[in-house]
Amino acid sequence: MSRLAWNKERRLLRSPEFKACYEQGKKHFTRSFILFILKRSSPGPGIRLGLTVSKKMGHAVARNRIKRVVREYFRLHQFDFDLPLDVVVVPKRNLEAKQLTLALATEEFTPLLSRLRAEAAAS
Image (cartoon, rainbow, N blue to C red; front, side, top):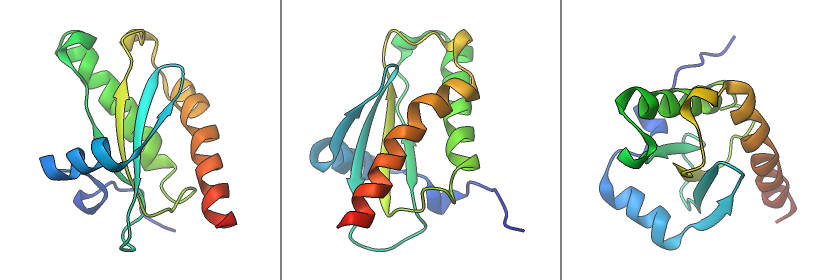
């Protein structure tokens, strides 16, 4: 049985890592999120996740809920999409933090990540 931890190796922590995703990565849109996805050349621990949630999204409780739900989705699906990608997730302003659930995150992220996995397998 594998562990479902989301340790430091699976997170983007430094500003240059975020900047590389913004400048060199591809933008992908869902209904409630913008994802900046950069394919890493070095094989590593799979998807590395970075979150950018602006104060425009609401007070700290709302921002933390968004981050918590997105992290939980990626933690639960880390072995489903084991690709060498750096992903920065930015919520759109139309996202209501109170209505964000794990089911909504799954509905939005799974088709996109499945398509990316299929593209990686084809090339």
